[in-house]
Length: 426
Image (tube, rainbow, N blue to C red; front, side):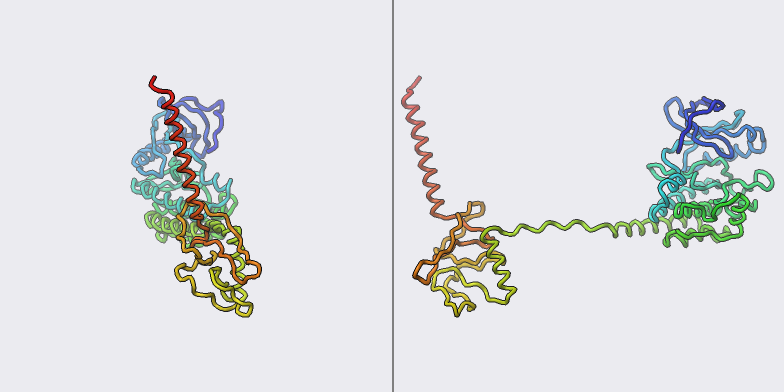
């Protein structure tokens, strides 16, 4: 809500509240931002001087304030204090931080269907509490709905009136805002809770389209359209259009109740929110695991090419005569049955020495290339691999390292003993 500096004619203190800023002005008076001695902030409305001199208005205003005290609900601004006997009557309500629905839509555009349904459900629930107190708001519109961090709040009950009261302050003059008034308000008939339902439907249409469902024009033109023409709902989401159209029925008896409206809007809000969750972008794919490098990578790629080319499996690298050129596509020999076949992607070398695979964590032995002896048809046994595609450590190298470690440890221990013996007792 926009704040302006106090003007020269504005009061600085009203009742027990000190005024700080001007929040706005309407047909009934001026609204100020004030605070009490404890620092509690309030929105304080001071009635216009000409209305303050009208005794009929004062009596109505007193009944309205009395009815507003009975309202209990989280979606309304709580009445804090009022002075009905002052030269200019005033009342203070809880200050609600946040922009109005009108300013939100004007600055950022129409809301999404899920947000509209959620706001509408909260407002319907608030109207249930208002109507249970025997009060009809009569001027529900986007500028009288504040979007606070805790949810929407209904404000400005300045023209609210008890159920069944007339909407005319003077003959031929309707109270409210053109484009959001119900047809019975324009005709001067008695207001009912259905009157606020019509205004809520027009408000939801505005939140969907960014404009009144009855367009623009002078007050007379707008009031005529409200009574005689159908609302234009182009741009209202399909999920909300039937319910909004029902709220804008010309006959009050054909409109849904605030309780029905609240339950229906909650269902639409949950369904639309689920629809937004279903269209979220997919999560990024996890990176592919690294393939083995070095000689194993070459072996993997070579085997893949052979399979795609329809060739047979490569011959084993174990002991035994090498296959002849004419038998290059035959099956390998079965001499090494004790060695299980490696998994796909790893080398299938045989285990010529019958050594068991090394434990995990041991350092792999340096790779040695398979060379063919000159003048012979046999190959040297290649390095053995495990099922994980890693080459095990050489047992002989492990024994050599263990021997060196033990010898070094003994020499160091012997040296420490000799040094202590030479020093003797101190």
